[in-house]
Length: 118
Length: 107
Image (cartoon, rainbow over all chains, first blue to last red; front, side):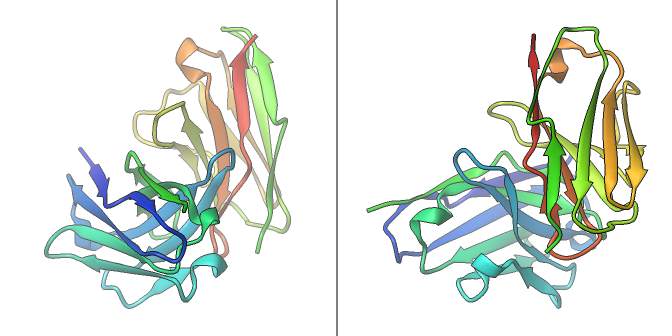
């Protein structure tokens, strides 16, 4: 079955960086869009970024533009989210997501916590 | 960006009862609407997309309908495992956006 396992979260100071990783298994990774969705404490789900199968298309919501970079390695069945210039309001549970081509999410990871605090 | 709203914010229901959850989009999303269920401490789970196609393994008591700006998720007879938060998501326009959720709690 599909498994998405996130890693790389933790506590970081404002202005710092983190790189989230997601290891995928149980499906043909290179055939699917992948993405990241987050949920901040007490808030709802929020799309962060997505990447096409061949990495040619990468999309970011406004708060992520210029600070976050999504990438993937199809040989390693992995997707990444490099997060720079982190702010307190980036504190959230970040989910790795396997998406259908129309960008609804068919499978979710368990989530990885990112806490930005001094 | 398309804004998604859901109503009500909370529903108190007894097991065995049926419920209807509403989702509205600020502009037409045609039929590009999905529903997810999230239980505490768990990842969300895809229930329905398109907006009436059940995902693999989803019981028939879950059904979705609607098009344009108005959508509903109906659970015909609530089981104990159905008490959760339900989110709708449009995927017609980028960025894909989620509603704020409806919490279905035990009465």
